[in-house]
Length: 254
Image 1 (cartoon, rainbow, N blue to C red):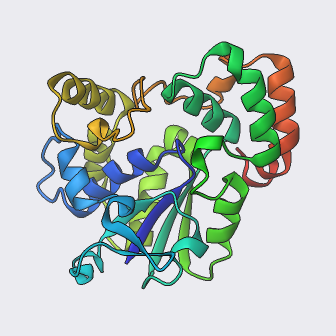
Image 2: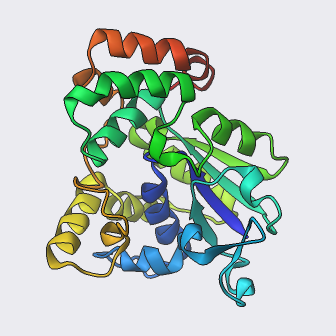
């Protein structure tokens, strides 16, 4: 079983689209929906149930998922008893993660100061109590002794071609420039934004319409920029967050 994992709002969905292009779009067709991704690069969370205080597959067909990539925000310790093989880890600047989260859940401006303080101390938001915090997630997977590929959101933005080559090497597949350009076209931010708007407006079956708890008010695909937080947060908020996450930002060049 292979895993695509990240802290929420770090680029997991983008990577799922990319993996679909590399592993399943053999004819280099234009992709106009997210249902392909939902089916071919499934969400691990939707396949599990809790039994005896442990996560287990809510299906007897576990072998069906042996050789594909499953998306998750879980930490290594939560699913380490599964037959894990390769792991793709996506990491994003935590300040951009924070801004993406407050937009996605439509957090009002008067609550941002308190959430900044909470994020600085707990490295997560209150709604993510079932997932590890930002540091726990990254450290758990990096130190899991599994074969992993670490991909930075900023590198996917600014060095896409080389990151696709790196990903191809990790997946043990050969990728030529034609394929790279197809992947770039089919997974561009503008393309994914267009797909989301269409599927939401039409209320189609897709993971863009998979808000079972009714918590999501804004678009999943928001801005997609690096260091966009500087346009949203004030200096005091930025200083607090940079102090809290400074070592990781420096270590990983975020």
